[in-house]
Length: 197
Image (cartoon, rainbow, N blue to C red; front, side, top):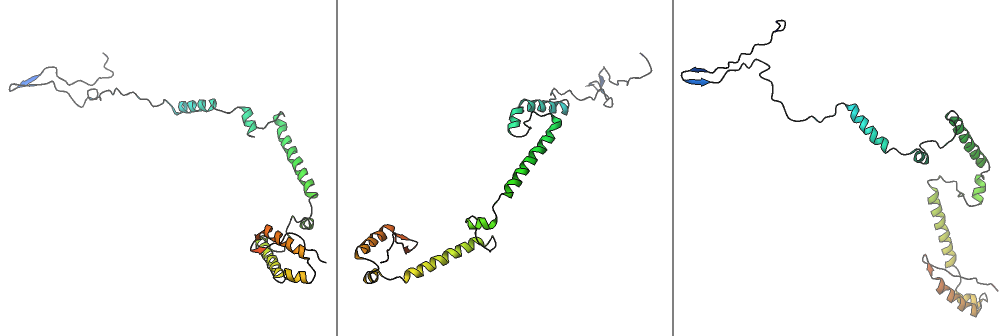
């Protein structure tokens, strides 16, 4: 043995000492690190060796479920083009310009607001857009009230027959039409036309 690196001396005795008829086991020095080593655990460590291995495995799984190029083109994720990559930007720019030109052409031929009002597409109103629905409801109620007043002031059937406006046979025809038409909105409606003599 070489004396360059001295090993720690073991201070255990192999003989048992007896004093007063007592037997003691061999003594061990607890300061020696070799003798105080912990018991080996039989548990197996299952943690991955490195986080990169775990990432590699997850990447492989994701690559297996990766969608095909055709599916990505259908979902507009990949460009569906046969043009060289250097020309794709120019192709997109030309497509945008074509759409812009079409919009300008359609906007130039768009009818004016007075034409749309004349065709009853836009409402003829000077009110704010938030108030236009209330304005329409008010106009509707005013028309209904004026019609109701006009109907209240109309002459009875008997008066019309006496004055020669209606004939007796037309009077019966009006009764049948009134019954068929029913009531609408609390007002009696008459279907048909009264001819004046």
